[in-house]
Image (cartoon, rainbow, N blue to C red; front, side, top):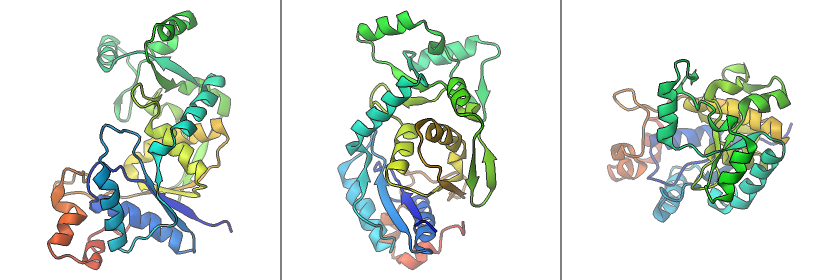
Length: 280
């Protein structure tokens, strides 16, 4: 049986909190139960939100909790060349297109269209720039207008055919490529996106089991499509429950009272903190 490889991939934009620890422990325990590898990856592609002190703080808190990882932590900020190369491959097969729309223009277009496309999370990109003639695209880029790059979901799905993925708790899911619409794969300001970077790095690090919160289940449909387009291996998935606050809202970094730093200062031990987590 192949070695299990999992990863915990926080963004260093705040201190580690209980939600992070739950995600880390699920990935850690899944790997360790069969002698596999547990990796740490920092999702720090958005340089406008990361702060240097959070890298060390997160590593320190994980060690204190007994959630040791294998090897050096990977920083996505060091992988821009890899993301650029993957984006070029998608351009070559025609699976992405440049988008020049501003957020306000998209909102206005959605409001104008009576049958604007919608998904489970609300309005989807209406495809304005997908219909833009090639000459217009080239002229705008030649004039120095920096585009974002969007996945042409309909075209891409035609290339791959039907897809599915297997979740260890919920079984097999059939991929619905259009759930999130033509998502951005490369932002104007940072040249990549969560979807592109995470899919690329899971393949690069030979991750066999992707564990993450159930709030990212829809994103997995996009990631399976990208994996098929790029010839990346298909991992298994485990979409675990979320840690909620007293109001039933998913924990966020702004909730300092439930940060590991705060809980530790209040006298909690690693054992008492781990006992606060959901079972799965």
